[in-house]
Image (cartoon, rainbow, N blue to C red; front, side):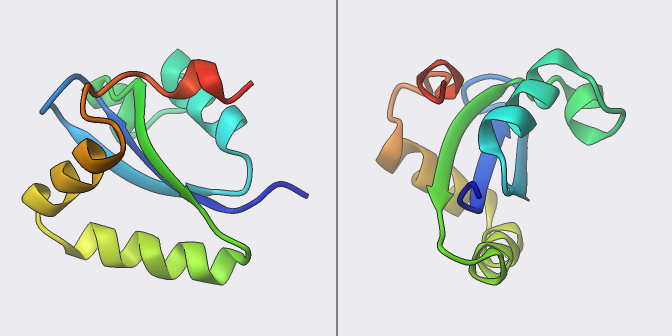
Length: 95
């Protein structure tokens, strides 16, 4: 069983942001990168995994996702830059 994760995808540095939750971060990030599923991330080109946090329980991850989504864009950018100041794509390090 993979750990639940909350994650942020971005179109580019300081670009469009998408916050999501998944139990398989590598698979989900791949789906976003390749535009495999219709929706927000494909429409806005959010292909870079720029931030994530792991949790022990999916309920904890969902609660955190809601907290982040309810926060301001400024707070989302602060989260990203605390973990990933260069906005590097973190996907290659997942495999």
